[in-house]
Each structure stands twice: as structure tokens, then as C-alpha cells.
Length: 343
Image 1 (cartoon, one colour):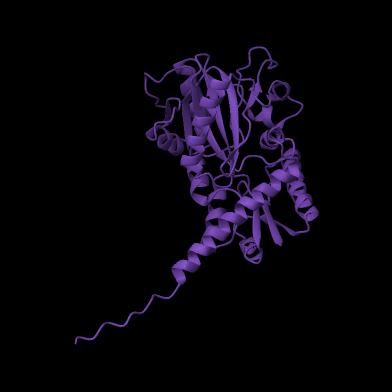
Image 2 (image 1 turned 60 degrees about the vertical axis):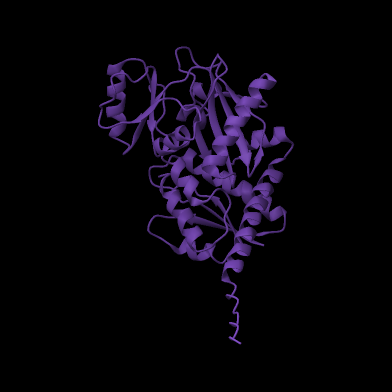
């Protein structure tokens, strides 16, 4: 089978660490696929250059590691839309879940309407925030992922600090989400198709003194930063059985509602001291590196890294075959019947 692995070609603003992280994951996936006997072509995606699509259409499957173009996450929506419109099979969810989940305020609105527990939120309009909005509040870009724009100053405890933070964020991002900060444990629930992986937890006990227990950009991507060492994953999470069932049920509802249980993804949650889970974010196509959270949950489930990659491939191919079968059925010529002649 011929597989094309697509990825963000990056921009001049990327640090060497950013480039290395993308290249390393692309190579990890390539080696797994090659070891299984597949022909693999690596294709960078660049803004304004559509040669990548021509190369993808010649493949049996596109393995999507393209989390944006030039570092902008929202452009992933257009990449997947192009693949979908041309009927090219690809891994991960379809374009619609990606588009919705890249707009956190839209995803939260839909989840809340479905009756799922989400913290109070508002899309910032200038620096005007409702006077009764609950504090503390966390401010984040609404159309980014991977903790972009989140640092130690993201959580605000006063109206003045909140207005200042929102104004600062609007200088860099078009859409800014203000969300009620939920104190408690941070949990992640991974999915591959309809299979739920063991619940994972971020242990913040080693965070620097005075830091909020949140996963900042530095905590996620800067190994030399103190916050990186302060966010230690624990998988499986140590939860009472009844709490784990409740967390899993809500996570599955969120994944099924927004992701249609297709592709792979992660539901990020907070669990209060009273045992109430809240959905913070549904994250389709999360980091697929060998040492990232989804791979860690897969290992706890009993899948080695190469098995995780091939499960993702099998899910995508199975979905594609169903689509092809449906298209063939629709394409069948209409049955012609001869009207009965009157006697």
C-alpha cells in the first residue's frame, strides 16, 4: 500500500525545537509503516502551494500529521476539506469535527446544548467581559491547540487582570476564549475510533511554587522549563471505580457527539473535589509522538506504539471502505420497470 504522510512545512517563526518535534514524529510514523511493508512518501504542506494534494491523490491512504499550515492550526480544516472533497482516504476525524473543535467557543456551545458539563465561557468581545463572569478565569486562544498562548499568566483572579489579559491576547489572536477556571484534577481520555483508552492524569504536585496547575505551552514543549517537570503524567489515573465510570461515560459522550467516534482523539477534562467532571476540550488528532499522551494511554491499553499507528490506519481504511461501498450503492443505475399494459 502507498501511504503519504502529510505535515506542516513550518514557518520562519518556528524554533529549532518546533521543527525537531514535527520531523521526529513524521519519521516515527514512517518507520512503523515501512516496517509493515508499506511504501511511504513524506509530503510537506505549504501555504499557497497545492502540489501536496496532487501527490496525496495518488496514494492509497494519507496519514495526516498536518496540524496546520505555517503553524496556524485553523488551516488544518482546509487541508482535510480538500482531501474529503477529492475522496482521498485519510487518518483521523473528518473535516467537520476538526473545524468545530478548532473553535473552542463553538465546540463548547454544542457540548453544553447536548447537556454535557462544560465550564462557563464567553468569547471575548474587545475587553468587555460580563461583570458577573465567575473568577478565577482562564484566557486562551479559541482557534489554536497544543497549549499555544497559555502561560503562567493565563489564569486571572481579578476583573482588572482579566481585562488586561484579554487585551493582551487580542493583540496576537483573532478569537479569545474566557473560560471559568475549574479547580481539581486534570484528566485525559483517549480514543481510537470507538475504543476508549485508559484514563490518564496530569500530576501537578511538582509545579514551581506559585504556579497554577495548568498545562502551559512551556510545560508541554520546553523540556528545560521548570513547568515541564511539574506536569507528570500518570496512566492509568488512580480513580475510584465509580468515578472512572462517570468520567469515561461523559468523555465518550463528548467524543461521540463531536468526533462521531471516528479517527483518534483526546477529551481533556477537569474533576472537582466533589467528583464532578467537566469537559474542557475535545482534541481530535492530538500529538502522536511516541512519548506523547495518546501513545502512553495506548501502552496502558496493551498496544505498543507500532500497534497504535496501525490501529489508526485500520480505522481509516475501514471507514474508507464503508464510504466506497455506500458510493457504489448510490451510483447503481436505477432499476427500469416496464409498465403494465391495460387489458
